[in-house]
Every structure is written in C-alpha cells, then in structure tokens.
View 1 (tube, helix red, strand yellow):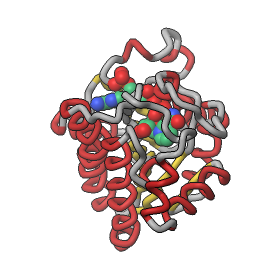
View 2 (cartoon, rainbow, N blue to C red):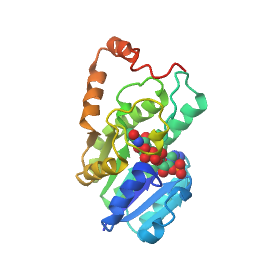
View 3 (cartoon, rainbow, N blue to C red):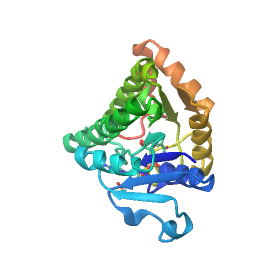
Length: 249
Ligand SMILES: NC(=O)c1ccc[n+]([C@@H]2O[C@H](COP(=O)([O-])OP(=O)(O)OC[C@H]3O[C@@H](n4cnc5c(N)ncnc54)[C@H](OP(=O)(O)O)[C@@H]3O)[C@@H](O)[C@H]2O)c1
C-alpha cells in the first residue's frame, strides 16, 4: 500500500486519479477549497480516503495537511490543483492573472516543499506536477495560464535533474484537453478532447512508470512541438489566422 497526496482532488482529473489509486487499495488524501465538491458517498465508498479543506495558496495550511497525512506515510505527491482563465480574453485581467500564477505555480511550490523535506528524510518519494501543453507556447487569451504552466514545466525539469540525488523522482504531466469542470467553461474549440476517465488513466500509468515527462495526446504533443520550434514571426502570423482568433474581446 502506498500513500498519495493529491492537491485539487475534489473534481476533474484529481478526483478521477484519486479513485484509481483508492481502487488499488492505496491511501489517498485529496484537498480543495470546497470539500463539498466531493461526491457525498466518497468517504463511505473509499475508507482509505482522507480530505483536507484548504487552498494551496495558503502555505501554512498546505504544509500542515501534508505533514498530518504523512504520519501514516507519504510516497507520492501530485500537485494537480489549478485554475484557468475560463472564458478567454485578449485583455488580461490583473487579479485573475495573479490568482492563476498564485495557484498554478506558487501553489505547487507550497505543496512540493513540505513533501520534499519528508522525502529527503526518508530517502525516497515522488513529486508529480500536472502542467499543461499550454505551457509550451504563449497562447493568445491565456497569458497567465500559459506562463504559469510554462514556469512549472521548467521548475520540474530542473527538479528532475537535482532531486534524484536525494532519492526523489519527479514527473511532469502535460495533458491536452480533458473534459472536466475546468474545460466546460471554455468557449473555444478543444481539439482531441479526451474523457476525464481516460485522461486520468493515462496520467496514472505515467506516474506508475515514473516517467520524467509525459505529454498527451500525441497529436497535441506534435502540434505543440511544431508551434514551439517555429520562427516566432510565423507563430505570431498563425495565431492571427481566423481559426485561432477565437475571441476579439
Ligand atoms: N482539463 C484539462 O483539459 C487540462 C489540461 C491540461 C492541464 N490541466 C490541469 O489539470 C489540473 C486539474 O484540472 P481539472 O481539469 O481537473 O480542473 P477542475 O475539475 O476544475 O479541478 C480543479 C481542482 O483543483 C482544485 N483547486 C482549484 N484551486 C485550488 C486551490 N487554490 N487550492 C486547492 N485546490 C484548488 C479544485 O477544487 P476547489 O475549487 O474546491 O478548490 C478542484 O478540485 C489543473 O492544474 C489544470 O491546469 C487540465
């Protein structure tokens, strides 16, 4: 039996992932700002489920929860909690931008540091970050989201070089579009949209295999690799084409 702490595990990818680990007989903790989002029968159905009501932007609360759960063991920490712009806008909003970076980047740091201390002490552990293919380029209308996920990819690329020296594995997951409450808010097209169940299954397999980097689906990975390598002047022209111009707001 392993112990998994998953931030933002009350809905979407996090909850699907939690269920997969619980069904295999592992101990799992989830956290979120509103625990009522968890299915009402979750605790009865999964006695090994632990839950903490907190925001990952609260450094102290996050640290306390991880330390509390770790009293029963801690093997894997999945920094999954994240927010997006929802309806995209060409005109960036300062408060929304700060909130996205605060949750998607600083929230991961708040999550990883207490876990790293525990993993360092025990000489083993696994940090997993749910980034996004949106981190590969600066997407129009999603500046803070792209920036937060891009920074997260780089943060974890460095951790994957540094932390194995202390027995700590690092996995970065970059999903394409997955059908969750987060993407339900999107008002633009979502190529290769995948069900949440399938997305979580793919993520679980990558975690189990301790992949350093997993980008999926492959079609979106290919598109993003091409977009990233294009001369930036061509990228900018492409993003101005009508199909990419999803919002004039
Ligand atoms: N869906 C996709 O297409 C997609 C693609 C690429 C990457 N991702 C990434 O995957 C992760 C999960 O997204 P999802 O699609 O599953 O979204 P979701 O269904 O909206 O789930 C997000 C989870 O994060 C929690 N959360 C949000 N802010 C939080 C905070 N400050 N502190 C603690 N928990 C917080 C939410 O619970 P509360 O609201 O109760 O706090 C919820 O449990 C995110 O990092 C997202 O960026 C998603």
